Length: 283
Image 1 (cartoon, rainbow, N blue to C red):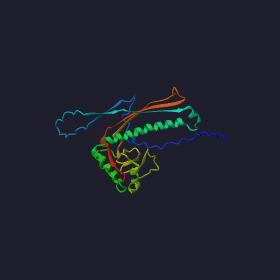
Image 2 (cartoon, helix red, strand yellow; image 1 turned 30 degrees about the vertical axis):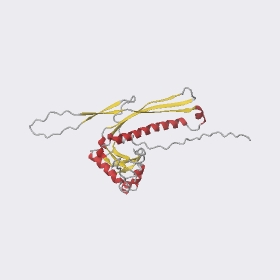
Image 3 (cartoon, one colour; image 1 turned 180 degrees about the vertical axis):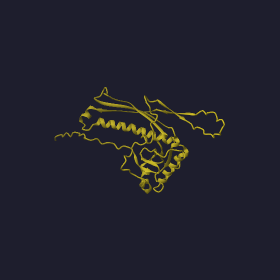
Image 4 (cartoon, rainbow, N blue to C red; image 1 turned 135 degrees about the horizontal axis):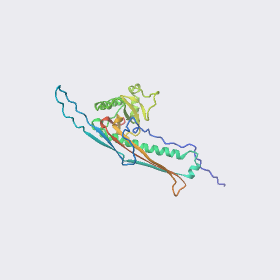
């Protein structure tokens, strides 16, 4: 019996992984006001702020009080997160492949770095929300329904109102199941679920209750429960990042190409009162 050789055939197109929407790191959710020039992990961005100025009554023909000394409250944004990628493609694989493996590997590497930063930002925001700005608790989360999910958004907005947070530019980031509840409420649908004439930002699914509604699979949660739905304004969180280095190189004991890159970043919630949060379980 003859032996038949069946070669392995490489597909001309790569099977691309399904990606999460990257939401927390976009400009409308956090700001880059203090990014500056980041040279290496461990750099610190100093953020100064001025306290309130006292206003007093003026009495005609009377001396005013001595000028008050303004208080200076300094916060530090520490660039303390560093992530890298390092992958290798063998020359034989590259020669046999019809698809551009290197390009897709670079794209996947960049996406993985951004996903890690997005999850980090979500956790930073979650931990900084003041206790008075939370609806529900980890021990006793609320259970929204299609009849009251919209009303919980209104309640989140009221908490921001009480903290003097600007109305323009507010966001709320919800998981897919919460967005599904909103879609069953005519108040959300009527407010403009989709805007065909405007290009929506990454993850944006509409507007309601004074918020831009963003959908993300990176909403912090505990094993698929106790979802931390964060609302707020971009003024609350400052984010700074830098891709410090990307290098291609030839591994000494291999035939092929390798690429490595380093991404450093950090975040600081500088105005916690500009965030509110709903802790919720699926209905």
